Every structure is written in C-alpha cells, then in structure tokens.
Image (cartoon, rainbow, N blue to C red; front, top):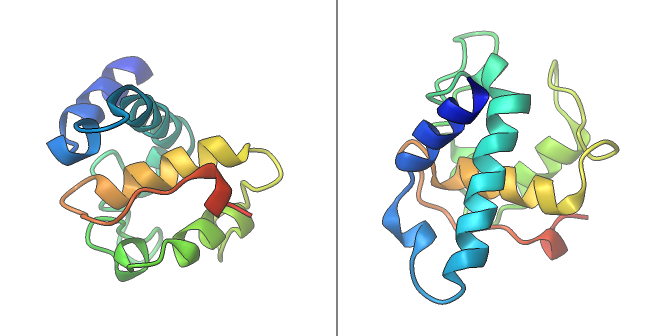
Length: 120
C-alpha cells in the first residue's frame, strides 16, 4: 500500500525534478523522498501535504518549506518542532535531504533541492 502511495506521490512531482543532468540521481532522491514522506510524515501532514488544521502544519505552500534557503526546513526535520519528533538522530543525512527535497517540490511547491551536505 505504501509503495502505491509513494508512486502516486512521485507522479505529482514537477518534471524539472526528474529531468536534465544527473537525472538518475535526482529521480532516485525523489523516490527516496516520497517513500520517506509516506512512511514518516504522511500520517500527520497527510499524503496531500495539507496537514490537519490547528494540529499538524500544512506543507503545501508553507513559507518555511518554500524559502530560498532550505535551512529552516532541514532544521525542522532534524531537530523537530512542537509535536513533531526530531529525525536527526534516526534518519541519515541522505534521507533527510531526500524528504526535504520532496516536500520542497510536491503539491505546487517550487523550491531548490537539498543535498546531504546541506544537512548538518
């Protein structure tokens, strides 16, 4: 079931995320990000990124997610915030980068991808 949801989520990503130089690596990061999102994030933020009003933030169009610098989004995933757990101690930098990249490109978000080197 999770694999089906991940494939559906990937289908909604913009073509710019999976085209051009390094297409295989970018596609793999998108796949890993969608898979991670389904497993770790969707139960609270929902598969459509809309969250639950007043409980779990909307990620679609969220200003923190779409800032030019991904630092705030990375920090939120690594350190947690409010009811959100910290994933920094349990998720490798490559996976954090993948899921933040996914969130920054899904649901109409149009922000730069994230690399493992950017995750501290």
